[in-house]
Amino acid sequence: MALEIERKFLVNGQPWQGLIGQRLQQGYLNRDKARTMRVRIAGDTAWLTIKGASQGAVRNEFEYPIPVADAHTLLTLCDGPLIDKTRYRIPHANLVWEVDVFHGDNAGLVVAEVELADEHQAIALPDWVGAEVTHDVRYFNSALAQHAYKYW
Image (tube, rainbow, N blue to C red; front, side, top):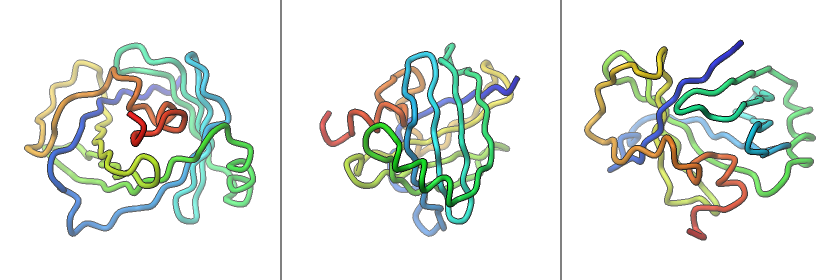
């Protein structure tokens, strides 16, 4: 079974300045509290991802590559608006932080995620990391597709 162990934080400043990011578009075929099913396109690659309910910072995650043409069709079947963001990868203290800068109705929101090997793994926080929002469901991408940041 595949597990995602991830912590999420708000971002202070603009640590991605000068870096090259990757534009992502994603939508949700299902956003149940117990599971989500997402389709994501990043350039010339696409994935179908199924995630279980979060237990702390841990949840089941299954991700499968799919043809980009299929992903474009699946995006038309998604429930609610699509998520549009640019992702930047920033190495820090032997970990890679993924900083997501949101666009559209979620513009102004910037979050950083770090994937861990263990839920209790100690991490050194970069100086640009702000408040932790790991357990705040409003910051889940699936929630942002239903209730965009600009409406908070």
